[in-house]
Length: 79
Length: 123
Image 1 (tube, each protein chain N blue to C red):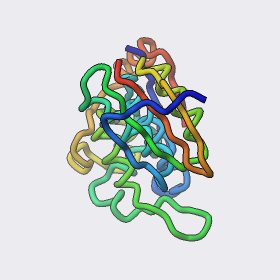
Image 2 (cartoon, one colour):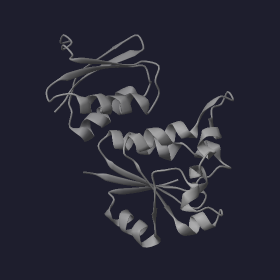
Image 3 (cartoon, one colour):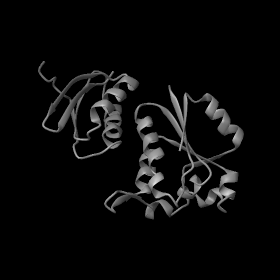
Image 4 (spheres, rainbow over the protein chains, first blue to last red):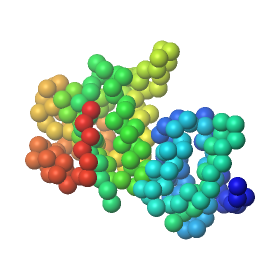
């Protein structure tokens, strides 16, 4: 697996349930500059399909994903 | 920009049906979708001032969160709330009885929004 990219921002959404991880992700990405990367950490079991769907619709690419134990980590780059 | 119009017919007598259209709309707004919720039939009863603070969206274990939390998240994300007069009349409500941020429209405006939207989803 490729090394995890560095992140400009970290969003801890562990313990939050749908739709809050996506809502918080949308808000933080609005604050960021283009090409900056946010690392989202989530434990919502639906997070992987949700982040993929969010990325597809908003155009902000998911550039890396790792899951360790039950914590899913997503690196998303602002378009 | 894509757009979704939700139609919410659930009211205060069905708390378990009250929040789902609202948080799906919130999620859509987070996906950069233009999104509105049209509250009709019993839907306007959820928007009466003071109601959503005490209406608990139930969980299986008897706990739950007040509906107001879901409404505030939706408005904060830019979801538009609409009602029409006949469904207010059904419950003896006027637009002044409703929380701030609700827009009054008529049937023609609703149908026009439905025709313009990419998807209409009814609850």
